[in-house]
Length: 103
Image (tube, rainbow, N blue to C red; front, side, top):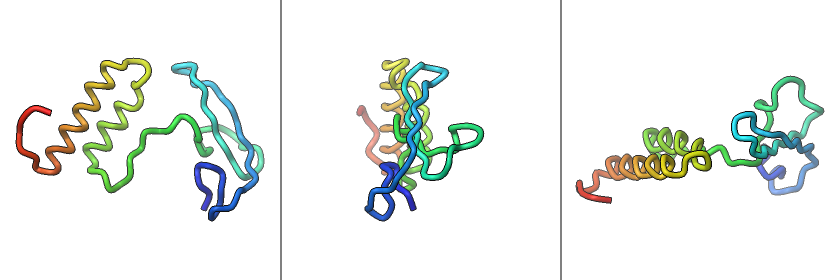
């Protein structure tokens, strides 16, 4: 199994890196691949940067879904991002059966 940092079982592994630009925000995207030059879309490669905003399965699904939505707008709409993060915190509190009140 290869890790996002290009290591395999803790050992460095030769990889080819691809630098691209996001067609939506013009930000930098960095991919890596250990096989030959890919055919088709970069989407099939391993993304190194930016982080995709995917939380572990241990996090409740509702919280993960809200966070994934928030992560996509974090730089384009910081105020909306903050509102979505608040929603994620509220969903987490609901999941934990926290006492209702203000965050």
